[in-house]
Length: 341
Image 1 (cartoon, helix red, strand yellow):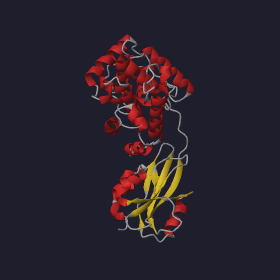
Image 2 (cartoon, rainbow, N blue to C red):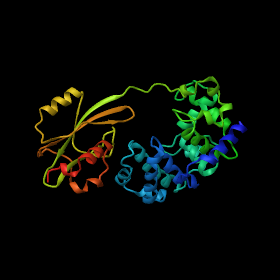
Image 3 (cartoon, rainbow, N blue to C red):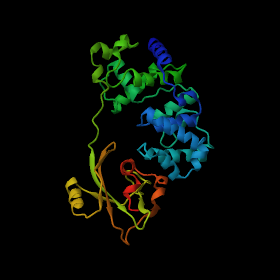
Image 4 (cartoon, one colour):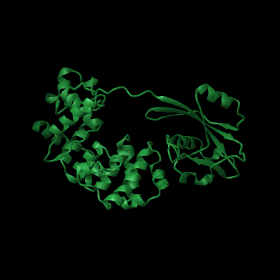
């Protein structure tokens, strides 16, 4: 164990990336970075991290912000429930903890949206507490070191990996060790084409000796993907105005804005509707992939009617409303000129 800790520490000192959240012990900044980087690449998340700490330099600023402002800043990152949870948790920290993050692992787990991984990260990075982190990179490193074929997302697998990670943890330097093993998984022990030929841990790696590196880690299969078929209608009640509707139902994109939407049960049903609709504009199809849903989206221009409900928004003000990435992509491609002047 000590030798692995030593080798990882040496590797990290030589190869670590300069990331701003590594240069602080502020639990608020560390928490922000962890939430932003969930399901987001570091190079994409970096810009959002800077935007958020500039807009909300303290947890008090985030807590008192309007939710729509938070969602607007989040636009482009997807998984908007993360942004809503971020805002709710900030309010909880202010209301229940007087703006101070709990300084224990168990205390951090009491925060909404904070699970074992995030609690371990904040506990070790901000407070130097001996709690091992387990993200996808760490699971991969540990599974290969130990040549474990237990699925990392199974109940038993999670228990086994948690036990091994805490045994391996350098309890005198938990923050540095956690950063080191995460970085090692991200840059060296990669999912594909890992750098085994120049690995400082090769003599300790059971998967390397057993030639099973490419098979690990093992995951249980995900649930089936749901396909949904959308037609967004571009409705202009009057010149220079477009109709938007807010999604309040418990579904994807909750609290975001969209053009009026028709959803169909199949691609054939959607295409039949489009072929019988005398719209003056029909976009190309956009495929938008979510974790367990694939969305197939078209945009059409239709005439206004007295029954149209929603908010009448000046076209030049569209960028002030948080919208789903699928609609953002459409606007990037076609621009505001698509609307009737």
